Image (cartoon, rainbow, N blue to C red; front, side, top):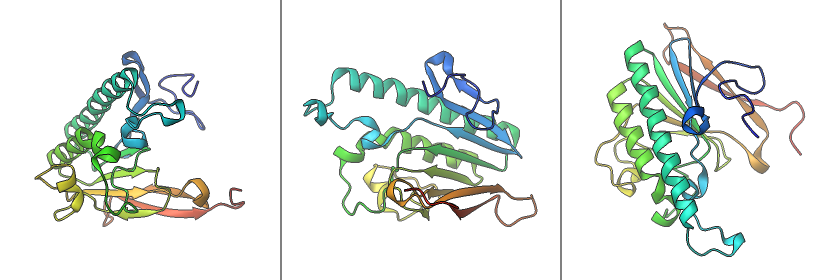
Length: 211
């Protein structure tokens, strides 16, 4: 329903590489201006492992666990493939876009029950960011309040939470505004090679704020 033409974006149509043959047309990648981009289906609610309480469930169902396992494996494959191509192409940066905020700064005491299922994805991001070496930008929604930080830098509490000994100081995370806080859109610019940073981000107010 959401991806009627796998390999083609919505809005201004653009050709992208997708995992449609693997059953995940929402996982896509493309390359622009020596920057590798990938959009990966990582939903919130503990990577969709939270029980479906609205359906009377108190534990994840077998079908739910199976979906999460298969999708997470596909997500990791997509991430590793994007970083591998970026290294081979000598790209300037990698951009990973997803829905889930795996490092929600509004949660003072995160629990494994709410975030633990993200661990293999976080581990993959750390491994691939270090292997790539250049700037990595993680853009997510979910928590809906604009934020820019380095959640996997040395000293971050998220490293110990996810059981990771190695940091990824080259990963910058940007959370976009959304939900009731949807007052602007994020303009993403790939800067010229002589610029200080590969990419820049600007919050642009809506002409007519969302109601």
